[in-house]
Amino acid sequence: MLFSTYTFLFQFLPAVVLAFVAARRHSPRAGILVLVGASLFFYGAWRPVYLLLLLASIAANFSLGLLMEKPHRRRAIGMLGVALNLALLGYFKYTNFVFGGIHQLTGAPLPLVNVVLPLGISFFTFQQIAYLVDVMRGAKLERDIVSYTLFVSFFPHLIAGPLVHHAEMIPQFKRGRTQRSAVLAARGMAIFAAGLFKKVVIADNLAQFVSPVFAHLDAGGGVTTSWAWLSTLAYTLQIYFDFSGYSDMAVGLALLFGIRLPVNFRSPYKATSIVDFWRRWHITLSRFLRDYLYIPLGGNRRGEPRRYVNLMLTMLLGGLWHGAGWNFLIWGGLHGLYLGINHLWQKWRGVTAKASTSNHVATFLSWALTFFAVVIAWVFFRARTAAGAWIMLKALAGFAAESSAYVSPGILRVMDLPLLVGDEPLLLIGSGAVTTALAIALFLPNVPQIFRYREYRRAPESSSWPQWQPRFAWALASAFALAISLFGMWQRLEFLYFQF
Image (cartoon, rainbow, N blue to C red; front, top):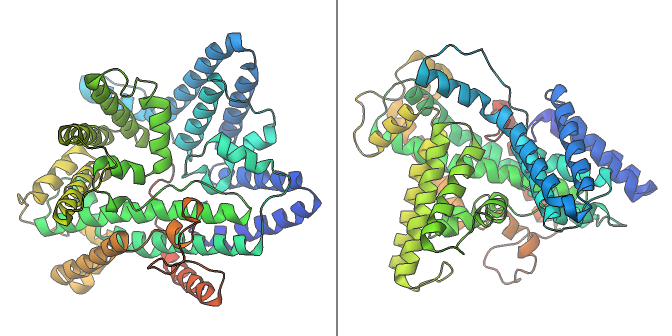
């Protein structure tokens, strides 16, 4: 069940909110139980059989945490738990990839294996690994199975993040009085409407200039240079508005129940370095990779050569976390290379990553180089085949095929717009859409800034951009954004991180 569906918006969500409000009047614990039941139903709505997998994972990790109470066996049990979680994730996420790779390399006949990836397994597995590692390091273990279950399965973040930390979530569930109010609920609904608008109106419409082109390339077709740049830039913006929009929706939904989720995006395309980019993009994943992979590998404590090896290993594994495929590995490797070059450059200049410059030309060039590097890496992230990615890169460099991307009947069935307006006008329409989306990403404040969420709560009143207030004008703007999004939901395009 996705947030951008009529079933979720008009059936599931109203029922859960009403049940939660009624239960909270009885006791805080009753409200938590309602959220647990709703979250488990939400997860099981897609394939009920995988609800058993989620419950088994929760039960196993909770039990392992209890067994780690005695210090002398804490490390052994913790390592066992981490290994079991990685084995579970590896089976569901990489079995098809490994069997396919063996078959391609050896040509040996292998048994037919088609493992269906459960929803959100990457997210709920990583969150529980973090919990076990923290307990292994001496953090307080959780004894309340209800709170622990909600920490893992809370439906706003269950299938798409943000990746949450048990120390920032479970205490909120245990408050004697959840911080709910009409203003908080209004803020939550407004943030949800903004996120839904980003996903449905911006991202889903940009997808019309992305999916047919990459599908054509993966099938061995060619693309002109103009279409290559249009589709690549469109995807660069599509994935940002899609994923950040879904994260905003998660934040807004959680606020309806008095729960605050972490910010996951902070205007990443404004970054002026790759280091800065990863402080702004998928922030909770960056935090996880830093705390549970990069630092345990040694971080920058074992000399400069080891630091760059650790950076590369971290990003390669981060790429594989996103998906089982060589293209994801290349994407991670590129970002590992980028980060290494970025740190070498900073060391050569004798400045830190946080240093800024008053030279506007230098700042612009830094931004342009960073943005270009990110765009090129997205080609591998989006293409389903290595061949398709290389064809796209050649087209971006000007070595384009003679044919248009829209030459096959299969492509035309995917996208009807070329049949209606022709190729050249469609390029103009797409260019306008990309330019508008890029301007929004670069020049407008992000959603947490507009709504003064978390670290932006103390934003000055004199900000150059209007900030949310519980006023009629803001309610009208939110209603308008929600109405436009509802009309756009007929496209039924899936969230990019669905079944991830």
